[in-house]
Length: 449
Image (cartoon, rainbow, N blue to C red; front, side, top):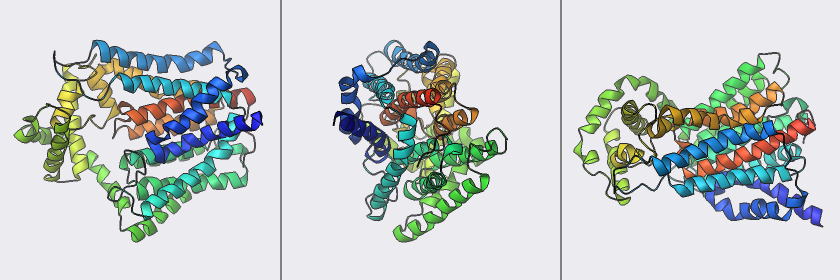
């Protein structure tokens, strides 16, 4: 009986990682039951013994990142004396992230045969999550035409669904034909989630970039047996794109048509300085600087109206304006940045947003080149903890997390926002346990259903 309860809690933790894509922060009570409670109950029955090298490859980038975040927040906020700090970032953002990192680290190592159980449970949990998202889409429970379910933003279902789908390609050479077909079908469904349901253009660019990387790796003999063929990957994408068409016809939503506008970033990059200078001249944005959080809504609305008056997609135009303001701030303090809370006067008090929609620029603005380097090391944690795995498994793991999130964060500052940072931290702890299990048991070649 005891072993069955433990197995149910272990499997429930993996399911929770998946269902977070449509429940977001509302998954916390569930994770307390399947994540935190078992750590205390089964502490004496857990194997946390790891080599010093493995622990350092995990601890250095993660502890270093959060230590720098806290140091900047406490000792270098970048605000004038007496100026009210913004809501984000704050101490809670980082404390919860560290807690999630520890939970993923400890809980993942309690689950025996973690790799096999992840490969067995996650595909069907993703299929169930897709059914939930479909219900929201076709019942009209969405923001305009974008499904976010119970999450705060539609990007949450998009990036988590795609991340977990790509991670399921681990050990491709040892999967059964049925398991391979299921994973290719999930790639198709991930295209529907990203383009058809959520219209997440930044995640779509990242998704297609990683799929292209998989195809290129497949050309090398070292990876030939360890990845789907180019035909299989291409067919999965095409099927996913075609499935978006009946979604569009049934709902009247053309999220698929939002993708081409992302190329405005490259077409209009030459005009950024001119646009930002014109934006600076509009008193409506700058004159309302920063009295309280309520002003942010008005500032954001005005910034969006001004962007809509110019050629191109308003969302892209607004991003270009924020990026230009960020670059100007970076040049003032390139090495150590302007302070942890400096995005308030630079971005929030002008545009009404908590972040500048580019993680790399966020790091540079707040902590300079130093913070950028530490942030990149944090982002590459999946590669560091996968030491000891075959090259193909390391490539899949790194591209699925570091590559996907890294490209998507060109368009959004995910690691500056609570849920994304908290989930990413939980995922890093889980991946440490997953890779440790794979290295120890040599399971990438095992059959999974």
